[in-house]
Length: 392
Image (cartoon, rainbow, N blue to C red; front, top):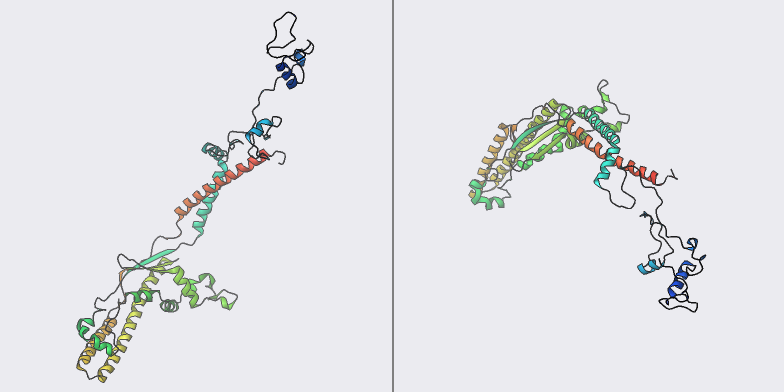
C-alpha cells in the first residue's frame, strides 16, 4: 500500500487534485475512514498508528430457532454494517450417532440406523417382553373348537308347479274361490327355522344347557347358581342371545347353494353333537309344520268342494286335495324334509382359536415397532438435555 506524503521541493507534482494544504483528496478520505491521517509526520505514520487489520473470518452456525425480529430488504441490510446477525451458541451434539446438525431439517437413514444401534438393547427388550406377553395370552385363553355340518336344502322341484301342471287352465276359477295355486319353495323357510329363536330356546331347554353355557356362574357341587342377586340368574333369553351370537353360525354358499352350520364351543364332542341335533330338530319342526298345514288345507278344500256345484271347480279342488295328501304323506315319511345332511359334524381334534404361532409372531412384530418408537423418543430426550445443559 503506497503511503502518501507532502510533495518535496523540486519533485514532480502529485497526481490528482490537492487541497489548500497540499494533501490529495483520496488521502483525506482515508483520514476520515481511519480516524487519523496517514499523510503526516513520521510519528503519525508509525506502525502503531495504522488501523489493525480486520479479524480473520470465522464460521458462524446460525440456529434455525432464532429468527430475525424484522424482515428488511437486501439494500437496507447491506447498509447496516454495524449489526451482525444473532448466532447460536449451542454446542453441537457429541457423537456420530446423534441427530443431524442444528442447521439441517431432515433426517437421513444413516442417522436413524445409528440411533437404532445405540438403543438396540432397549428395542430387543421391548420385543422380547411383547413376544412373551403374546405367547402367555395365547396359552392362557380357553381353546375353542369348531364343528361344521354341510347341508343341502331340500327344494321340491314341483313345489311351485305341482298345481300348475294340471290346474293351469283352472287358475282363474281357483282364484275366484280364494285359493292360491302357486307356492314358494321352502329353502328360505328352512334356513330361517334353523336360526329361529323358538328352535334355539327349545333346544336349550330340552338339553338343559343353561348350566353348560353359563358354567362360570354355576356351582357344580351345590347344583345352584353362584350369584348374589336372583335377577342375575341367566334365563332362556340370555342363553339364546349367547348361543346365537357366539356359538352358532349359519351361512349359505352362493356358488354351490349349500348351507354351512358351524358350532363353536370349548368341548369338541359337545360342539359336534349340538350341530347334528340342531339339524335333526329343524327337519322335525319343518315336517310337523308341513303335515299340520296339509291337514288344514285338506279340510278347507273338502269344505269348499261340498259347497260348489261347478264341475270345473270341483275338478280343481279334487286335484288340490290329492296334492295336499301327497304332501302330508311325504312330510310324515321323510326325515330329511328341510335339509339333507351331506357331511355331518364331527368332533375336531385341534382348536381353531387361539392360534399360538400367529399370535407370537404378531406380538414380536408389535414389540419391534414399539421398541423403535421408544428408541426414537429416548434419543429425542437425550438431545434436549444436551441442547440445554443449564436446565438439566
